[in-house]
Image 1 (cartoon, rainbow, N blue to C red):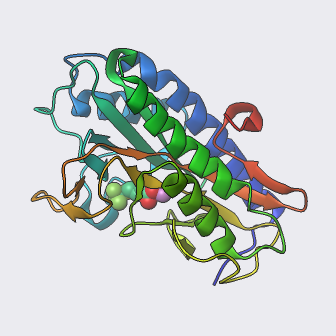
Image 2 (image 1 turned 90 degrees about the vertical axis):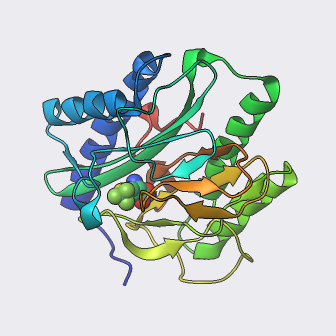
Length: 255
Ligand code: MF3
Ligand code: CO
């Protein structure tokens, strides 16, 4: 069942989203050569605490850390590790879901270590973001759920990249994962009708090569089969009468 959020739930999700996005905008500073992914996780964990946010990842089905940090061919759910050391030019995906007064926001962004990347890599990440935006742009009352899915797939495939099928976006609220499951591919015009008051975490995962993925030996980290580079971005949105409102971007900018 897709829950419609009332005003007080929405207000809490707005605060969660605002605090989380403020933290995420600071993360770039600490993504430098020679830090470990665990260093980044602990830095974010501390920021979450300072802001009264509680990580939803930690303890979720035994997940050990506060955040997911996935590097290069790792797509999502990378477990932060002390011995995973970043080097200049690595593509780092940081994914954080946290609650404020019991209501969640979920957000992921891509960072290149030292801001160093090729033109091709820069375009790749920008297409992940434009695919997310294309999906968000379909989040109007009266549209169908798969209008979002289809818009994401089109944007990714029109640019020649792969869209990962094995993981999806989701409804969000009191829980990190609620109905519906939001696929990142499919025909438009299918699934539930979207309504004002629904809150979604939309999160395309894209690959420079083939879209097939597998779960590594740690039981969590999702990697591309062909070892190609992966990008992942995620925002939490609220559907209003006037269309989507992005809760995890300062000023609701579409950039
Ligand atoms: N934030 C992730 C999501 O978008 C979930 C990761 S939490 C984990 O769904 F525990 F599953 F790793
Ligand atoms: Co999510």
